[in-house]
Length: 250
Image (cartoon, rainbow, N blue to C red; front, side, top):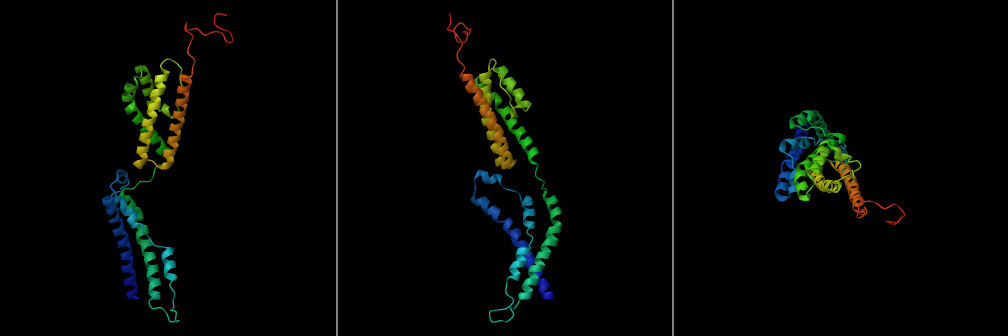
């Protein structure tokens, strides 16, 4: 019996050690091979990786594999070591479940891992960051497009109030075209900031698609407003419109 217990403890130790060795060697090998910038954003520190290495508990699959080994040989004689094999499998399962399973909360706290934000909070935070990126890029794009200062100030105020999430109807007053063009340019800035947040794993693909849809809708509304603005007929030379259905001077 003591031999079986020692064997089970040794096998359990080897199982845990191999998983730790794998997760603390292969990632560094991949880092040496794959030097792409995107790969660097996926890296995690040694402390953050430890819960994953420690969570390799065994269960039904290990037991099923042990029980699938025949108890007798083809000649009908008992298979030597079959009982030890089953005992070792059960012992490893119990040891990993009890030792690793019960210590996982403490390991997670030690690693400093925090729960993921809910989608609403994550989306709100991402929206704030892409609007901030648009605010930072606003002066340069306004200068490039030669946007009037009053229009730039209005859009800056709009962004600060997060009105870009639901722009609403566009005013057709003076300077509206320059404002639409500036808003349209800032859509690209927001998209780049959004993709950057996804690449940095600040947001997931679900939040990415939601905010992309918001930006797509905003872009369509701006483009429709620009098209309507461009399709307006020019005013008469004297600045007065002729009555409908009658020729000027009739």
